[in-house]
Length: 335
Image 1: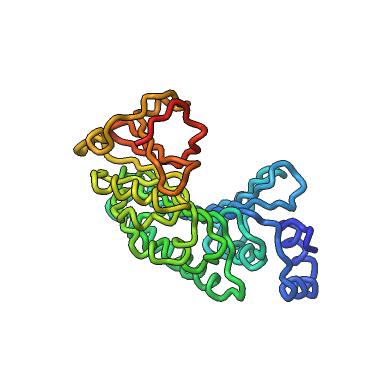
Image 2 (image 1 turned 90 degrees about the vertical axis):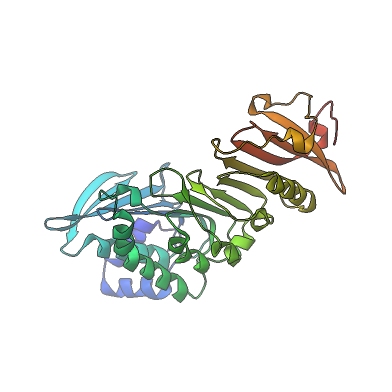
């Protein structure tokens, strides 16, 4: 039974009452490795990757929406597209029944869990955030209840959120197993250009502190101090502006943190420009692979004779610090 793909497991439950009860009692693990959920008021999409499916395309996507005769679903998989009227109830009910079953049988570590609240799909712009927030409230509460009631917390390596504020994310992230989280991605699902976002409560979570990689979409401006990201190995964020003090702190963080390998910041080019030459002096004039990326500076890492810090920028909207092996940089002049 452990080798069955999820579709076969669901079909087997429908064979007879005794078999259904047996499966519900045993709760065999599914082969699902990735789960993607996208929610708006007109449609909900559930997609998952099932490693036990014996096809090259291992994905299954089910779209749920209301029909004049009840709930209509469209399933896309390696077997083709299937449309079906599944009952008289609201489409949210059928979506939740399926997601609840998926989560119930999820025992292995998910490679990816993605949840996007599609605020940009709502037509009434002045009220769209409130509309979807109210619509999704019950769904989010059900997911939270499911996660908190598990004997073993849901294990996820990479978790991806499409949100408009941290409160939407805080309904889910604290209840994921912090020991398995490696990467957190945060995207702006408002769809109206760059927005400010507070993540101060998120940065206090165990999941944040245990992750090694963070990526925050370019449509979100963050204002958290550099110290909030010091434990990560890889960082990609967007800020309205980057001042000289922040750049100094970032360089010092790189020198003191053995974990950090890559810190990339995008910032608003319309803001006052920071001339790094006044901070770091003469830039590296040797050759390197990504010369078109912008000017580059190289600095020592105290106590690390094998690696150096590379600081690269296009001088107006992008800054990137990386840990580079000394042997990979010819004609080096260290500052």
